[in-house]
Length: 437
Length: 175
Image 1 (cartoon, rainbow over the protein chains, first blue to last red):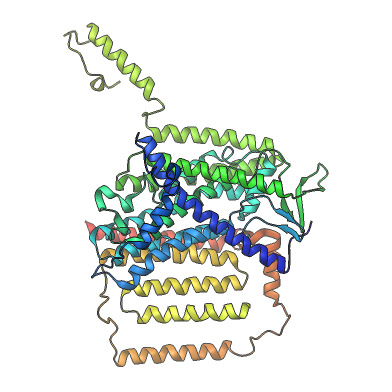
Image 2 (cartoon, rainbow over the protein chains, first blue to last red; image 1 turned 120 degrees about the horizontal axis):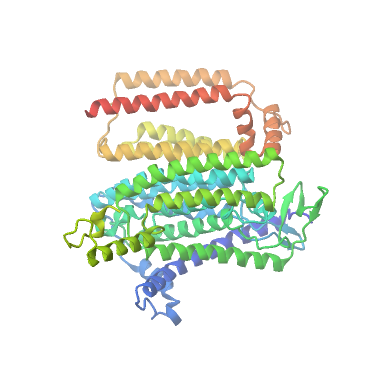
């Protein structure tokens, strides 16, 4: 099967850009509704349920409201940067999606269409580059507002995003070492070849990436730049109507992109179990895999495969979106120094150590001569599992994992004292915390 | 097509550079610098150096300039309502020196750099082959960690020395 070319390729490209952009904006709009409905459900309220059936038209009402509201411009604000900042924020959040493959290649009468807007050779680096530019919008918005709270929010945003970019990059290194390339299509392909999605063989990288992605998109428990109990609403305090809406769209766009990235990097992207849907451009041919003797197995692209894999990709992305919302309404906000300590004293050393561990493991497996595949993945899963357990045990500090057992021991201790067999013999109940057990 | 994009990127890079010098507020200067760096990344993409372009944006535009912005905002440097640039004999002199340097550069480089249609310069062909074989990152990583590993490590040590020195200086001032 040949890749599409000529005029049909241009038509396909325009269709992909328009289609993906529309879907992205729809998902962003309905993510706001999902957030409000799920938060209501978690807090035992009803949430917005008046506009349309189940409140389904609420995002449209919100949009109209934002368009019609008065647009304010503080008298002391820096006019140029105040207007520019929301635009700088929203652009990177929306264009990052261009390098994420969303489905198996689509077969058309004119040739095979890759279901990715731009398969750039630098893949994930493009994502890192653009998401690192997104911080300018936050910082500038806070600065240009000429408002103390907004300014503090902007400062926090710059410090936090620079800090967690380090951890994000380090958590990607094991993935890059395993894949051997930086393009996202190749990442999906290598997960198909291994037969295990990278969430298991690289479990600690997955956890580090998840935490860093939360921090990078400024979501609770990392929403220091807009901590409303401390800074009014942080960097967008002075913004109203569509400018405020742009910040909101950017935040949800970040969430959707980060979810799609996590799905692609660690849950196989559009891949479904089995080899029936595998497809990759190998030396100009669309292949499904390699036979025992090294010859290529051709893939047959079909429209229903594209549809099913697109569904799989959507479900995985929506799952992470749900996790984002779920975490927001479950965990309280960090203190600012805790955010910095977690980033530099926990995430950075862990990321470095884990990258070293994975490098040693991958090098040993390659030296032993094990071929890349399912067993390879199982060995990595074992090593990573141990590292993840150690990490969780360390970060937990005896609160949750050992917590229940420790509590039982304290209760037994208290009961023993209450019965009177106190070593001190004075019959007084010694509080379990004072025993030092 | 490529030529049009080159002129666009070159113009924004130069305009950004001018903006750094001429902008009234330090934050404006900094943003102009980001524009200039990003345009240079665009030129790198046109030269097929995708990895360099990405690193240019990630490291310079995305990390170092954010720190600059952080410092400028934290110390509240400069005033955006008055010109910090003072026009005098000295500024005229500096413009003359810069112009002279640009002239020398243009004379040295400006000879016969134009390439005939359809001829791929040998450097470009080597890059293409390396990218095909090792990928966009591998083409740079391979020589960096084999042939040039010693200079690379020495550069790393140099940076470490600079960091330790900065820390030592900062610490002495506090106590």
